[in-house]
Image (cartoon, rainbow, N blue to C red; front, side):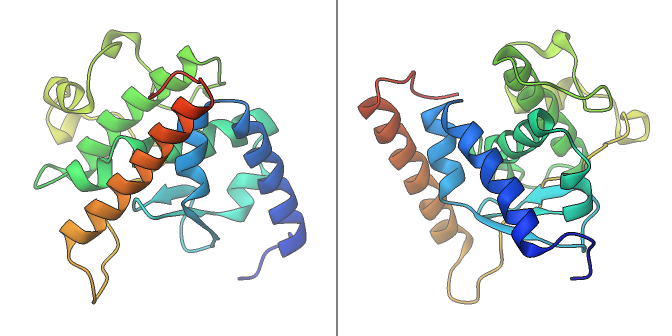
Length: 188
């Protein structure tokens, strides 16, 4: 990876983001600590497949620290809500958009900054990703997705999709337990 940032600079910046996340929500942070982080130039922004968060180092370092935290939490919420597993046969882009609306509402309600180019609309308040998906127009009339951040679950020669789902569900159960032990409000 050729970047103007050293590995040390990237990891220092990302570790600051992780430390900020700890005070945010034990449930979400616990899930985040179970995800692999990979800085890569192969994507434009950031994305997750449910097991790994990939981040473009130039994109990440170009964000303010509060927005870096929002980005990190946003990707974790995709995992917590099991978006990559629940996508099924639905239109990938449209489902990603629906998930982004839901997640960005959660972030905003938890006082995290949402950049103006991220998908946000209060009319979807209280809706699930599936409900938002059903309310969105046909794909030809969808809003532009600023961050295409939802990948299919990882393909693993030794594991089928059900085993991967069980792994992700186990991480979520650990997060629930950690949240209860800390007397934090369990869940999203």
